[in-house]
Every structure is written in C-alpha cells, then in structure tokens.
Length: 335
Image 1 (cartoon, one colour):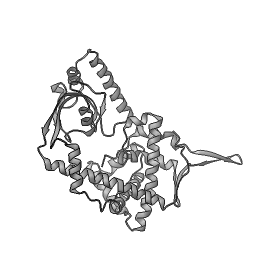
Image 2 (tube, one colour):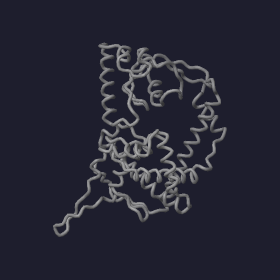
Image 3 (cartoon, one colour):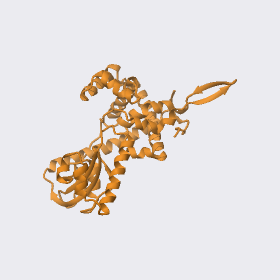
Image 4 (cartoon, one colour):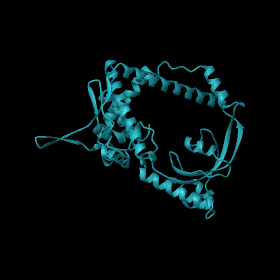
C-alpha cells in the first residue's frame, strides 16, 4: 500500500468543492452543504468528498498528478471519488449484514503497524497528517471503510477465482509467440528525483525542466551525457546517465513501457516513474531466451487471477447497486 501522507497541493484541485451554499429565509442566511448522492438511507455531501479526497488520492486512486492540472482531469477524479464513496456505503452495509465489519481495535492495529513501518511515533504520524490538512479521525475512518471494502470483496468476489493451465498457456503463446524469449534493453536517463509525496507543482517543474533540457540536447546545444552528469542524483551520474541492461519486470513499469517504445538513440519526452521524472534514451535492445521460465508462468498466473478478480468485483458491485437505492443528486463538484 502506498504511503498515506496527503499531498497538500492536490487539495486545491477540489478547493472550491468545500464552499457551502447559502439559502435565505426571512433575511437570515442559512449555510447548507450540497448533497451529491443518496445511498439507501445515507447521503454523500460535497464536503465529504473534500474531506476524503486527499486520503483517497494516496491510498486508493490511480492518478497521474499532471491530470490534476486540467479542469477535465479534476472532474474525472472527482467523479471517480464519488463512485468510490457510493460503493463504500454499499459494501459497509453488506459487511454489517454479514457481521464482517472491522472493529475499532482492528483499525487501530492496522494504523499502528503502518505507522511503525514508517518509523514514526503516534505524535509524528498525527502531525504529518495535520500538516497536510487531514485529521487523524478522518484517516482512521477512511482506512476502516477501505479495509472493510477489501475484506468483503475478497470474501464475496475473489474467493472462488481459478486459473487454468489452458489459460496460462494461451497467454504465454500470445506473449512469447517465438518461445520463451524476452527483450533485454540498455538505457540511459536524465533524472530528477521526486519524493513519494511530491506536490503537483513539484512534478510540473521537473517535467518542464526536463522538457527544456531535451530541446537543448536535440538542438545540439548540450550532450545527453553532460546533462546527466550535471543533474542526476543517483549512481548513473558518474556514468553519464547510463542505467544499464535490464529486462521486463526489472525496472519501473512506466519506464520500461516507454523505453521499449523508442528506437535506439531516440530520447523520450519526460516520463514519470515511482522515483521521479526521467528523459530516457534507448541505447540498444536484443532478444534473449528467458532464464527463469517458472517465474514467467507464476507472473502470468497472477496477472490472469487479478484480471478475473477485477471483473468479478465489478460484477458484484453492480449487483449491489441493482438491489439498493442509489441516486446521484448533483454533478456540481465546485470545480
């Protein structure tokens, strides 16, 4: 699970969502919240979305921070969050029916173990959340709901997922039509390291800096190696940016995907990985026989299992909605 420390800048993506609406009666102003959805006998308000948004973004969402630059991207993330919260209400109700709801002790144990894994005291952990505008109680409540979600889906949707040898062999034949061979690729990079809790602005600045450096290199004003030796903060700095030769699964998935889409000598646009932003230059690529065939089989089995489990989860959530009262009341996220 990704580090659950909130990005303060991303709160601004839905900042206007926290604005309440005023109604007037007899010249007296009454401040009310906006109802976004009704789920059975419960409601989800716009202030609920704002309160949960930064925690959701770090724990459950899959969002490129650059998407939050645009109004369309902000709206998509807000819509996804509303859907997530609707599902959360339905799953919590189901957990209560089946006596599977997590207790306060369960949640406290999880939070304590997670906090310990970060090497933080309780005071430090609370302060880290507070500095980013998140209360400790909101964090615990989100984790209680999220862990309940995982427990119910595991029991109801994932318990009987099976993967056959025929399915594995079919996927192997699709992925390795010429036998157990895979690409080995050598790359160099120009790298700006970013912390896991990098703000949107930090990501933007790194992207813009690398994009400008790429233009200088392509115009012949500077060499790739000189720039890498100047700004890289990892071990490649002494090698002019040379990363080395790796194969599938060795490096960050996004880094690998972009690298294998290049021609030898070509330099990518800035690429985000879990470590920061990169300019990637593909040096060479060759195909070799897979050394650990069983590892490939195991990985493919896992991928097929996850694909099936995801489909079953979606089908299960659709059935819950079909047998419940769910009504979206507003699509005004204040963006």
